[in-house]
Image (cartoon, rainbow, N blue to C red; front, side, top):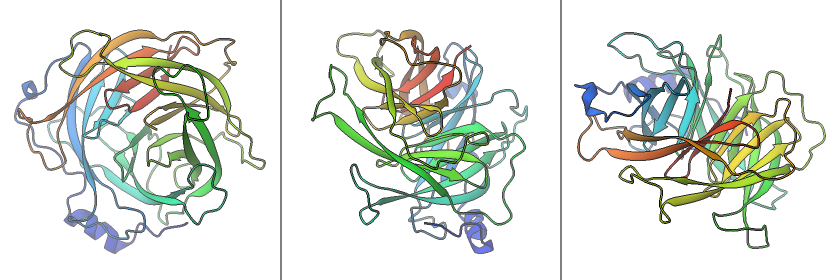
Length: 346
């Protein structure tokens, strides 16, 4: 389950394929305006598949990503062409015209057992890469499925000899679809594994769909006895498409479940699409009943593919909404393709 990731050959291949090459943008006006949303720059990420040792231009997946400053929440928003998003610190953006490529840290192979599987014979394997965006001082995890996990990098630097991930525990959870009132035998089940990245001291949650989330693990205790997750509450949220002005009965809705991971004292938000986000529980307690979320802001993003140099009429667009979870005061950022990122509100 360990992987050698930082050899000189791998790094050389990394440079040859131009990992994280800066998008060249002619005009900021090419990005449509949004209240409180300021486009900063674009990056591309190459991500090796599980078992793939070297970066290869032909076979290695790559994902275009745009970075914005959302001034209403004062967060750096990283949104990939897949619609996946992550939120990082926005107080260290560099004021310069040239954008640095993301700094490669290491790679991870992350096996995930299917639902109800105790053994590892049928485990799915996903590759992920870890980078530092030196333009904003954020740590970026990207899976081979285009999922993003973002955290402030702080004093973290690349390890001289990267270590393989250490498995902490696994969980199975049920997630209702929008409109599904009660849990039943037909409710969708999602499996996930939790790993400790010993190189950065982060916990990595990854599902059987290859979606991931990361959370600081420096204060997390080592898991010695695995406990089942505790369901806290659930809700539905609507997300408009980029051309959808108002919420209507036809607006796409997503079911979201919230669980407490008793092993790490984290709250796990997971959508019916399998996208996940993780935040510390803090001093919160389980709500006695589920309150409806409160809408905060709507957003529209344009995100170029990895090989797309400039914004144009064919550039992919994503809608997103920010909702307040009234049960926890956490803010929920959700895109129109069902990707989620949750952060603690003020």
